[in-house]
Image (cartoon, rainbow, N blue to C red; front, side, top):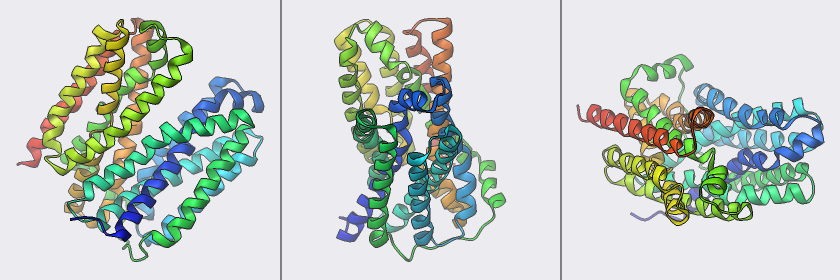
Amino acid sequence: MALTKKQTFLACTLTLLTFVMGTSEFVIVGLLTEVAADLNVTVASAGTLVSGFAIAYAIGTPLLTGWVSRFPKYPLMLTLIVVFILGNITSALTSSFGVLLAARIVTAAASGVLTALAMTVASDTMPAAKRSSVIALIFAGFTISNVLGVPLGTFIGQLGSWHLTFWATALLGVIAFLISLFILPKTAASEKSSIGKQLVLFKNPKILVGFFIPTFSIAGTYTIYTYITPIIEDELGIASSSVGLVLLAYGLFSIGSNFLAGKIASRNGIGDLRYAFIIQAIIIGSLYVTMNMKIAGLISIMLMAVMIYVMNATIQIYLMDKAAAYSSAARDFASSLTPVSVNIGITLGSALGGLVVAHGNLPNLAIVGGICALIASLLSFISYRKGTE
């Protein structure tokens, strides 16, 4: 069944939202040096703008989503977009590091809840046969923001001022707001429930196992990706001037990962993921051998990009459906869990990578990353078995 014109516009609008939010979240990485110099703080201190955003997103998203799910979605989503815009405007205007950090935390909270609501709206409004592909497309907005939004925002910040970058993201937010004003469904229902009742979801073994599948899959990739620049330069022997091109290619390949995710979700979901993660583990582990071979190493890295998001749509649908079976009011809360799990995975992968580099060498990252992917596969086997019980 094909999407109607209205459903197509809605899917594109929700993808635009994730693109705008992803650009705002990730663009600061390319501007840390400029921000640190302008606000007279160390680069390490400026790095808390990244970690602070991630922590606020991971902790605030499920709690706030559980609380606001009682309100009608249409005005709620528009209000959150306004909060997002104001957070970026505050970031653009401030000359205080403390105010900038606070604005980033507020922006993170708004972004997390918006993402969760976007997934619920998509699930409620799209035909069952197209639900997985649309959810994968919405997740692709974050990936595209890394490929297009972040380099463009970094260029704007380096050409003029980092303040201009936040003005640009605020402008993108205004555009998203104006489109959402007309495209978002005005009749999206709200569900009244307490946060306590929704947190009880974590007592459900199926929810708990499903939550940690993306954590270990993403951790496997980020064990490598956190140190991708030294791997490219020191191990593969590629010139520093070409690192940007390699990362651009990586980003383009990772876009394809979202569409592969949609295919998996529309077929056998968790069943297919059991073996997809084994393939991911083999690809990541292959870097142990190919890391000293330029062409073979690049192939391993690009294949790693293809596998990075294969679980997104399946896990998103799985968690929402399992939560709905428990309580329809818990679906909004459940829809927030995949992005939270991914952020935890990024943190875990970076930490594991740091330990490996501190006590070993770069090729050993491939072994640890591969083990993480195998754990994701094991959890998928457990989840699949519980689903058939």
